[in-house]
Length: 299
Image (cartoon, rainbow, N blue to C red; front, top):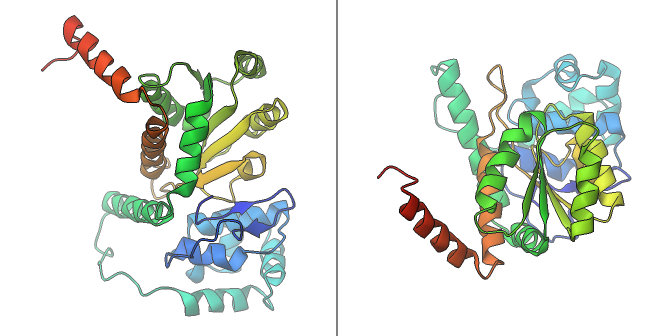
């Protein structure tokens, strides 16, 4: 799994099975704080919101955090107590004391567009920290390469991520099946993939998380598929129905979320999958030759 951790079905944050070091990023420090605690669904929602806004959390009031997470202010207080603090003020005081040294980059004078770019740069840095341990991605690559066919799921905001992965994966994988439209047929398509021999499903899950994605992953696991998920946080609602979740944060500074890190993680997974497909290079060379013969691309 990733440095961001995972959440088991009992709601307990756990990283012990991976033997990984905690990095010094704000999000990773929060994950270390949550580790080992059994959290209710509401508390996981608060934790998820805190990870997404890790740099801002030490400066938010309980009311502001409640609004951010879409919960009540007393829920935030109970969450702090569940983590072992006397209340939210004690939790916030702790977060301020352990906060890493602020960046020397002065972003105060940046306009909102520049701030969005800077936030995405931080998300990419965090992803780099996660990838310091290549084992989760390597494991995902093996699972994806071995699944014939390979269903790739992404609905609503995540549909473009799934499409992008499936477009490139089809050039090296013999049978990729894109699932980017929901509805009553999606379970049928999963059944068809399982009958054809699928063993793994790759899911891209981004906020706002559709209930249908959680339901679909639940169905996929019940059908016997291993679920590999790219999500914006280890506390995303899809965590409990994923076998291997690797997080990549999204930017939230603009009217619509930005997803540079999830897109890059998708390309990293493609690379890992290619490493376990012995004929990947030959397939790419064959495609290039056919594209040249057809004059497919403008030189």
